[in-house]
Length: 362
Image (cartoon, rainbow, N blue to C red):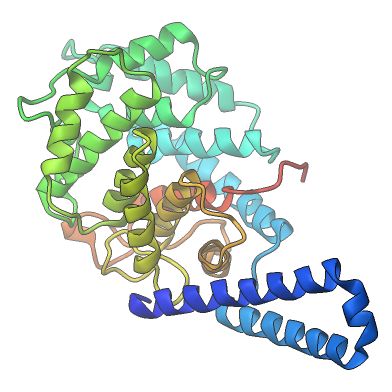
């Protein structure tokens, strides 16, 4: 079950316990003589402090240590690499759910000092070159996989994609924008288990976010037109929709909208600490990773209960092979585990777990 109103209650109680602790700490530090004159009062402060900490722990659950989080991430890396390389070598496909997310997750892992394959740069180069190549029908591959191109642009650093290639990838995105400002979802995305209109909006948001991240030229009508289409769309049924609305609000420096979508995501967190890919789904790695990433970008403190509970959920539900179970995102496979969804969810779990990690070696 989802927290809803009870989440707001919990958060207000937790905030209150912090306020109490801050007041107690302030009095004890800044007025030592007063407490020195009253040992019984000092004892009362100590008892109250322990009570507050006990209450906070019971509400939030144990917050996973960096060591536990790093262990889960490192455990997942061989799975992410194996599944992504299979797609490269056997399918020669730069699919957004397979290769795009793989190199994003591994790139972030490398920046956080995890052990990743020394072939990562080769895989990144392959994904970029494949996106810019022409298929046997004479069409540029990236035109049919704009969501994957967007993920390369958002997830990879400037040192991993040359300025020339980054510019070339950005130039692929405006192509085929419709008059209403949206883009048609690529590949098999229209068959997802949410309304097709929402998938269209989500694809439009990914492309818009990539263009904004790349520094869309002033006066270029592409982003304003896309923004108009996004704002005209109804509220989504997927956590991906909420996460992207939040990321776009942050990119546009819209404080009120950012706060609105932070609140919405926090209120949609389920009692087990996770989020489902669809709002009404049971918690899974896909929804949880997306939510963590977006909330992190919004500046939510990593010591907050939302982060601790979500990361604890991911650590608890990780499988022996390093992956996470995720049901299919297509209508035809929505009620069973599906490999592409598992790969997609696992990469997002890795990205989500790494939010807020202390920069250190293994």
